[in-house]
Length: 266
Image 1 (tube, rainbow, N blue to C red):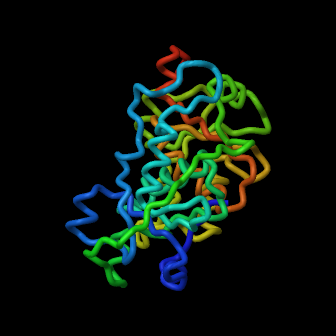
Image 2: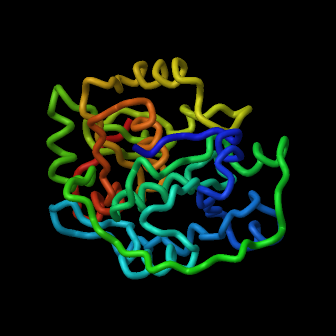
C-alpha cells in the first residue's frame, strides 16, 4: 500500500528509488531539489475541470489521459517496477495526488511512497541539488488494476445513508459550511499534518483526530473534496494507518454539482 517514508529512509535507499519532485519547474530549477530527483510538475498530470465524467458510474474525473501519463513517467525514467518517492512543498498534498494517480493507473501500491515532510523540511537538515540527473527513458505502460477504490456519485449518495460507512469532506470548514454533500462529516485534510515537521501527525494523534470526526477503521470511508487533490492526501494517510475500506470519489464536488445533485449548508 502507498505509505509515508522518512527522509532517513530515502537517504538509505540510494539509487534504488526514483524520487519525483512535483513542484513547479521553476522551483525545481531555481530553488534546488532532492539529490537525484526528477521533475514531474503537478500541472503536467492534472486534467482540467472540463474533463470530469458526467455519467453515474465511477469515471476518471480529474485523471490525466492514460497515454499522457505513460509518456510522462517514461520520460522521467520510471518503470512499472520502480519504487517511487514523491514530494512537494505543500505538506505532501500535490505529491499524494501523483501517487494516487499512479495507483489508479496500476502501479504497485507497495512501490509508492510519500515523503513524510516536504521540500522545506528536507532542506532544513539535508543537502539539496541544482543538478538534474541524467535519465534513461523507459517504456512505461498503464495496466489498470482489476479492483479500484474509485466510486461514482450514486455510490457516494448511498454511503451517506449507510450506517457502516462514513462520507468525508476533506475541504476547509468555510467551504463545508457553504455547501457539502448531504450526510458528509468534515475533516480538513490539514488537520492530519504536523505544522512543525510538515509531515504526518504521530500515529496516535492522527487516529484521535480521525476518531473525533467519526472516522474509524471498521467503517467504510468515502472521500471527496472539490477536484480530488485534497482527498489524495487523506487517502494516503488512511491507507498508511491501516484503513482497509477507503473509497475515492474522483469526480468530487465538481462532478456532483455539474449533475445538479443536492447540497447541504450549515
